Image (cartoon, rainbow, N blue to C red; front, side, top):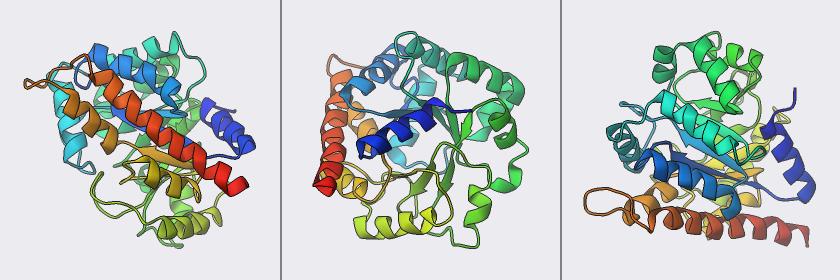
Length: 279
């Protein structure tokens, strides 16, 4: 079965360019603003949308995304509202792939079977669950694949050739390569190292490789896009959102534009990379 994610990466491969994958937190800083941001992303240049599922203990996230999750939870965001966000997005956009990213606990509490059925019905295409290793595939990965959702796995600089086959075994959609060791938004990746790592992973899989962690501007995105199938940007967008809020942490008239303008700039970097490589 071909998902929206499979189709999008296949289309971009024909175009000869990398995908821009954007991460924002569902419900940050409030439901309506987060939905407006999601709706603005494709026009700004996002090819795949990752929506964060807010969680109280996000151990892999840096301070920016942790605080975004706290803002969302404080605003009343929960799993039902996150799936409702996807449904409302889908009402106007049938093509842009949506991936839910986060931790297993909220899904476990919601109920795995119910979550998968509701996510599929809402229009979710894939899942990135950062705290479920391959050894736990029976918990969620295999049921998700059976339900027709992509299960996207993370590979890191410390994922060696011995470990990679296990990581890739039930992965689908794309592989998310974490370009630096540590938490999100902590450092800037080295394009040369990333390109070499992508080449190494590609020896083990035909799946597209999208690279994230530390991409903050068009220049870095362009450098990464020259050696990868996708560029993921998250913390930089969350930071842009944060700086647009008022002193009470509420959305302003600048909030949606702050995020979409940065996405537009980074999208230009991603698109410039492949044009240059093709000339």
